Image 1 (cartoon, rainbow, N blue to C red):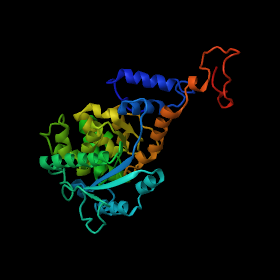
Image 2: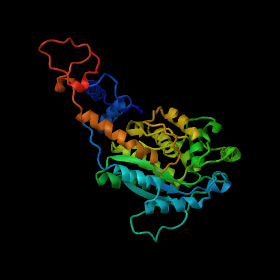
Image 3: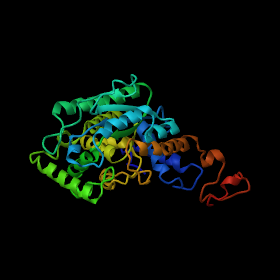
Image 4: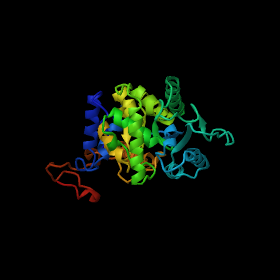
Length: 367
C-alpha cells in the first residue's frame, strides 16, 4: 500500500474501490495491489488508468561534503559510475532492459566532462562541478538552487511531451546519503543519529565519523530556518537532489505516476512534500532500503513501500524492480472480470438451480 491518493475526488475513489471489490476474488485478496490500483486511478482521474512510456531518470552530481570522509568510496566514483551508466553496464541498465523501461542519465553537477561521449548519452544539466562542502558553507547559492529546480522540471516536461506518464526516480552521487540524512533530520524533524546510516558500506568507525561530521555541519549553520524547505535544501542538498525536487513537482503537476526509489529520492520527495503536500498523491514508494534512515523517512511521509529486499544501491534500481507490480495493479483493474460479468456468485449470495455454474478455477472462492 502507498500513500493514499487523496480525498480530492471522493466519488472517483469510491467508484474505484467498488470496481476493485467487484473483481472475481475475495475482498482484499490482492493485498497491496488493491490500494495501488486505486491510487493509479486517482492519479489519472479515471477508472481505466493507462501506463505509457515508463522512464527512469538518474540524476547524478558530486557533493563537497565527500571531502570530509563520509563515504568509503572516493568522489571520482560518481563520474566513473555515470560512464558505466552510459556504457550500459550498471544494475539500472540491466533492469531497464529487462523490463522495457526508458533511461535518461542526467549530469546535474558531476565533476568532470562527458564531452567525449556520443550526443544524448548523458543529458547535460550541470549546475557546477559539485556542490560546496556544507561543513563550512551552504552547499549551493540561491541562484544555483533555482537553476537546479528548473532544470529538473524541464527534464520531466520533455519526457511528458514525448508521451511518458510514469516517471521513476534514480540518483548517483558519492556523499548523497549524508545530504539526505541532514534533510531528513531537519524536515521530519528527527534525531540526526536516527537519520545517518552506513551509505555505501561504512564500518562502525566510519559511521561514527560520518555522524560527527554531520553533527558539526548542522551546528555550522545556526541561523538556518529549518521550517523553510528550500533554505534547508540549498544549505545541505546536492544538485541531483534539487533537480529531483524539481522533477517530482513537475511530474505531480502533470498527474504522472512517480515511482520513488530509495533514501535519496525519498529525501527529495520529502522536500517537495514540505513545499506542496499534494505531490504525495502521485508518489508510489517502491521499496524500503537497508539504509537505516529510510524506514524513518517512509514513516514521516506516511508511505508503505511495495518491496522489502534489503537494497541499498540507488540508481533507481528499486523503482525498476517494483515496476512490474505497478503494471499488474493497472492490469487487474482494467482487465479482470467482475463477479457479474463472469457469472460468478459473490460471497453471501444464495445458490439456485438457475444460477450460472462457477468456473472450476474459482471453486476455491468462499461461498
